Length: 601
Image (tube, rainbow, N blue to C red; front, side, top):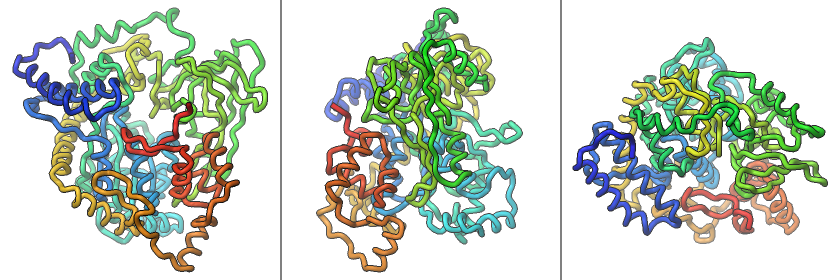
């Protein structure tokens, strides 16, 4: 239960009734006991949250799912996609990006920070829009920026603009991006008429100016109000699978953290000598984590193995990738070193944040072999980080996707799902700082607490009030979606694709099943249009040879991304994805509504 405060009997009965109703609905719609309990807990936790926040919990409560959010995104509406850490925001965005690309529409994928941009294979919104590090923008500045050849082409080609980690973007910066888009696209609609997808959670790290001063949140800007995005507040939880830990995190987020929660979380407090040696310590301040990691590595016996990053592309983009890549340019490892994976590779069984220990090096390739906390041995081969724009890779770096993991800053752990962490919140100074650090860890048993002050468990009152409004707006959006006939939803999806100049013939039907590519004839392409396509993708619409299929499978198993494969073979990403599906190397995951690498047997 969330806390020890007494709850009126009728509210308890109401919540129990919601649980009972959902028991029968969920029981027949999930595939595993774990999924059943997770879904049921989410229903109960949301109901209790609404009671505590003064909203009604006496009726059936609908929840915004990833599929609901995708249905809304596909209509072309401007969207603010939000939710707790681990609720699937990144999965939903990736699914939408894949959907657009499979229909010939290349979205502009950006983020507010370099680290976040590196995670999603895009660039910072500052770089994409051309505003750089400017704090203010005049009308003449906007004209000059939009007149640059690259910026002008971006603005002209764009149809959809995605901005990740919008919580770290100030109102002033969002307004500058809007001004450049309106000027460059010669359209006075917000952002020049682009579909805008804002992604983030305002309980996370706030915007900070270059002078390290607090800035206004993006939602306070005039352009946010003019944009009036549909709020999609994802409520299901995929990172934490521990109900006790989820209740603590939910209480912090709702500003309901009390003595019971404090007692429960402080059971995880340990003295330094009792801390495990193979678990990373998260620092709230910019401690010298590189020195700590280097010192710990130096205490290990045996010779070091050094792996150097490879790079290609324009120097400025390469430098940005190197600076924000979680794996260092020069990675030094030894046997018994504590490491953390910095990329997702579900086919091999690791994700960004998986902890492990180096147990040796492969005799043939020299690549490291790690043993994860679950006892799985994995050979870690190089993977790529890329900057992609307009369907082409502009820059790439390749490195072993590992980093030393005795120490790390909270900021660097952004986007990670960590099996365990040592957390010291004794010097927490910012609202939400404790929540951000704690929410990185999957379960309570993986948390090792050195200490925490009262500030660590507080959240901003301003954000708390705004979050309640976001939740209510999301419920209204979900109710409106539920009341819309499937045929109308499908028509809106098709109309938006056609408006963007995409292939509307491949649009999914309203029941979210993928239409067969063989069910409709391919649109006729004249020689001129085919030549234009092949100027970018030299092998587009050519037959695949058996040799290409063999190489495709080999590279995919080695961890190459679909974008990297498309660039290598001179084909579109959609064509590569279709080939991988045909070969059985990727399969559709209905729970996440996306194609994923087929797990190795």
